[in-house]
Length: 189
Ligand code: AMP
Image 1 (cartoon, rainbow, N blue to C red):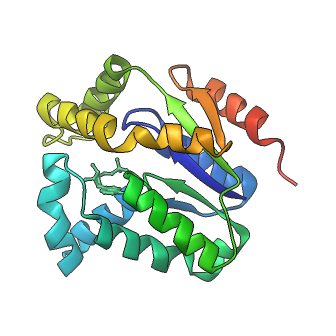
Image 2: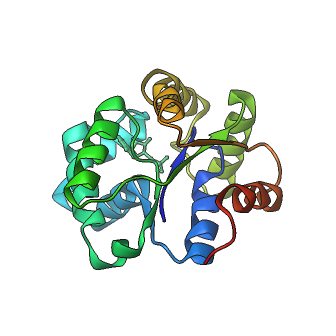
Image 3: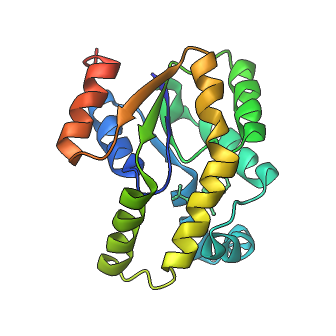
């Protein structure tokens, strides 16, 4: 199963991606997690993307696309994947299509996590408090949501046109949202 999760930060994508990964037996691929790991390692990639993440801006497409191309080429992604946080721009979406067709694969489904900005903001502020992410200020959160609306939201239309989109109302509890996802995807084989 080749799956993509689309939605703003604070929509619960990451939590649901982990559950999907466990139930359907496909790896959870998160570009945000990969960038955070690079920053924690102090690698050259980490040094480069650290200030970009802190400001709530997007990492340039060429860096992000290369990271994903390498990741999807690994053995564990042969059974499929659940992509979380990529693509975030129309350019990344086109690059993803090209990479997948190179390996004769295609997306099966795109889940769109629909959540209001106010709900996403409250969740992100709560997470910043609980996890001591003091750089996740209200300002940075607002910037991330603005970037989402400008750069990423057009993908909802793109995947809808391709007949791949399933809308998931994402303001309910984690269990309720996961039940919606299972209904949309069907039970694992
Ligand atoms: P996330 O954990 O998916 O919310 O990502 C955290 C941050 O990593 C984002 O705010 C961006 O700065 C960066 N990032 C993650 N994925 C991408 C992507 N596909 N394109 C550009 N930047 C990304």
